[in-house]
Amino acid sequence: MTDSAGRICFDEPQFDGDEIWFKVRAHGYEVPVDGFGLEGFRCRVRAGERHEVALVRKQLAERLYRVTGADRYRDSIRLGYPTPLDRTAGEGTERSGNVAGQDSVQGVVYRDEIRWFWGDTNRLAYPLGLFHTAGATSRLPDRGGLDPTVGIALDYRTDETGFARAMIDLEAPAQVLWLDGLAVVRDDRDQERMVAHYSRRKSLVDEVEHGVLLWDDATESFRKLAARELADTWRVPFGHPEPTVVDGIAYLQFGNPYATCRVPARLEALAAVDAYESWTCLAADAGDSPESRVPLRRADGALDWAWRKAPPVSPVDELRWLESEAIAPDETWYLPEDAAKPGRRVRLHSGTVRWNAYRERWVMIATEATDDPESPSWLGEVWYAEGPSPQGPFRKALKVLGHDKQTFYNPCHHPFLDGDGGRLIRFEGTYTNTFTSSPPTPRYDYNQIMYQLDLGDPRLIAVFGEPDRRKTP
Image (cartoon, rainbow, N blue to C red; front, side):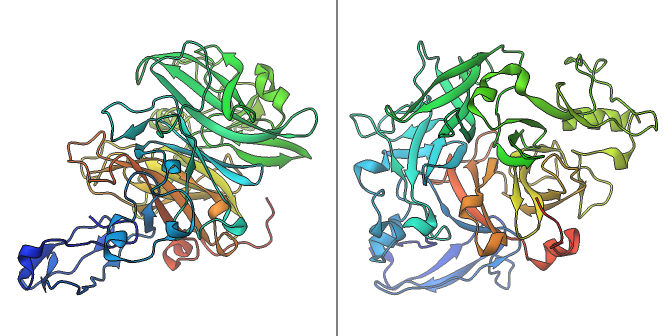
């Protein structure tokens, strides 16, 4: 297994001088093939020598490095190469948090530094880790941080043992405290405040409480701002909120993956249930049953899409309406067509929608939820889509990344790490064998991997066209 710099230290003295066959596998990359069709290469190994293997990237997204976990640059260090973290506190110190694995990232710029939070966090000292949210900081690339193409130096908040500590302070915590919807808003004194949505659970599916959190700078932890009824699932900032401005009003627009909901970007609004709206064609009294979730139409027959205090429309709704012919194929907002297979609809599971200055569009990175037996993975295929507004419509999707029998869920695009005016976007997700029958990848399993996507790639331009420089966000 390569380290985050793509190196392997082959430390087997008994084979010094021998010729060895190395089999090669790499998600999304074409590997060398010999005359018998075997993937790999033959090499005579000698102490102190180096052998370089070039792979051809077939997928659009380029794998950069592993963000979290232990021994990120293990082989480079053993071989005597400098690593990005040699210059920055984080790796190999008490600030590394003794982290072995981390699930589902949230990141935002707050008070001129990047704040990172993760779900469940594994450690080497015991099979059970931290389930009350871990946190760390890093510097912005233009303020002393690492070049985001080579790595991120994470400064963890730790407990007395040196392990990552809980970042949510709630009374009577359950077994699990998850965080999402991380965002920055303004309070009544126009000061920055960091907020999030929390879910307190007894198990993966047994939720007992949820609501809105507020960051306390003094204790460096979140405390409860407002609780919600369990059935009230969308009047909280969930997913990965994106700032927007409409008619001079600043909003947080959010959803997962589609940005179908919004709330004014003020602290007092986040706590108020009646401040939330969704982009919907449902009535205010629409419930959870399919019979009550019927699309509204205007007098001219067009779907009645509007911002209203009513439940948001989901891809499941649209799929059901499409199959029952309640809507036409060209009326969908959240079922993009597969750019490589016309007529096939892509059901996206989780991800982000961000404004992109290069494309002059709102761009989406999301995983696919599919039961297709021919799919290389379940929740491991990542797609790119774009639309004229955060809520869409998203008409086409292009697969940019795949994983062979491994999952890569909850991807998150970080615009504060983008390069070249937004042409190069960076996103990460949770790479793991969870939800598969495949064995884990040592050190990489249950960790975050960073990818880069070039939005100027001709294959992407062929689907979505050249950027329209006349548009504004």
